[in-house]
Image (cartoon, rainbow, N blue to C red; front, side, top):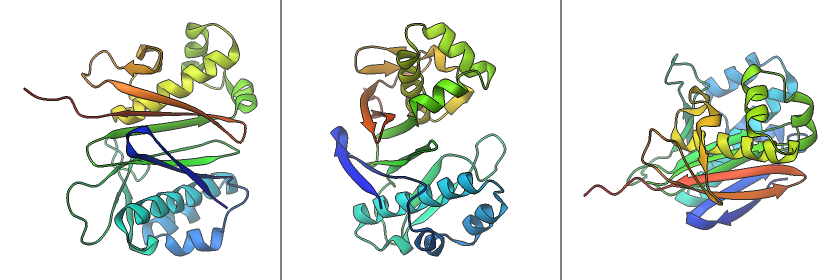
Length: 220
């Protein structure tokens, strides 16, 4: 069963536990390439997170566009290699104007999707604190960020989640060093870009969630 909420900026969220969702419905909603990707995913937990994420995106977009979830198309393309693991985008037949901005994040206990109106960049990230603590040294990048941010582990994990949300909204993801993100109380920016992001922090089912959103800069 999924749940949802609306936050500032017209952003809509939907989330669910990847251990408790309708897999048959998710598979029904997927198109051919998505089913092939799911079939090629050897790890059952990763496969479930993928299925659930695609279903949540379709449900959010369907509500916005007043269409059936089956009519929503989700595409993803990596800007670096052209693979299908890039940032997702959604569209549907007869949609007018630019499509909404969407973002996905997952951990072992939660998959969450965010959708923002056209023209508003959005990024979302999630971590389960206990799992994050046990994995904080799984990569040199994560270990370096935790060490650099200092403070308590919980504070470092929250900062990491915020940074990833910002970099997803930025569009470059972890091609940009997370430690380079500059934070204010509830604001953030990436030094080489003009966008300014507003941050919303949530705790959902014991998981730390951050949402970053920014409108394009006004050109004079």
